[in-house]
Length: 119
Image (tube, rainbow, N blue to C red; front, side):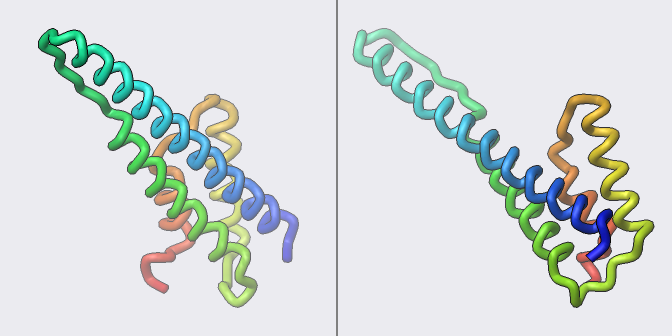
């Protein structure tokens, strides 16, 4: 396996791990919000709760699954992956590191670059 492929695999696995951490944070935030809501409700006051935690956790889980699928695809040596594809994946990671951000559509972009939708 080439060095660029191993680098892309490692980075994609780390991406899945990062999304897992974000998903867990959102789940924990949602639980804390529910607890605070229940405490406020017990006072007898009218309380309204609006939370994005549950949906955010669902989005993170989807991102995590897609990143895992991309990493497994990259790891499978039966899959013919060109150097330009690996260069593109690694360039996306480099740019994200440069901008200090992780776009939620990054796993989908990686899968698209690998043409996984056609295999």
